[in-house]
Image (cartoon, rainbow, N blue to C red; front, top):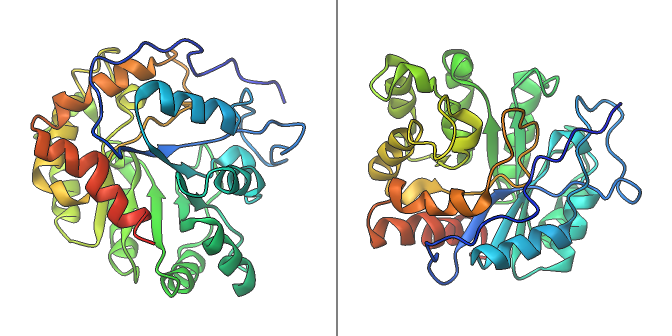
Length: 289
């Protein structure tokens, strides 16, 4: 399988906005290096290596203190690269794993000790072949006993079918990328109204970053900002933000991570909202233990 062109900028701008002390990039990844952490045979893309050293350097460059590293589909259910990154910075990193539903309890406990705090269910079929919902529900019950949560990735067209499953999960549920709303339809569209109704339930958290992945107009992503700001103001205690570095599967452009940081005051217009988004909320969910 051919290696995808680089999807991350090697020289991102220095953001004008300085995040508050303790700020967390709550959605990012590590890829490889492939010669040490091979990519999964069943992967649907092969990224350019983006190892932990590059992620940590970006964190410093952008002015963040901590990372939540999410297992990406190109590594499948082999979490070795993720665990390696967590071990390298146990105070500054937490993780979200993708695991085999039959994983042993002992392995889950080892992951917990390493800093994993949840599992991810990916329902985007162009990226993965999802497990049956009943299988995922049983896994969610097992990880809930550890105090973990579930992270879900889906697209807006999947919401109606997935909502009953998500509502019955026995733990907190973090939704990636605002549920991938239809940006062209606008913030007042019925689809986004349905999403907002779902996340009124206090078990749901939402990641409000990744405008580069949803935009119709391109940088500086003004078409996506109203969606994120609406959610920040609706559920200020349950929103998270992340760079999505190194931006896997980006086809339209290579995002500038400095620009992404500079969008934060646009979607969280007060210091209080920014403190919750970047510090209080991710610390409560990921770093309380």
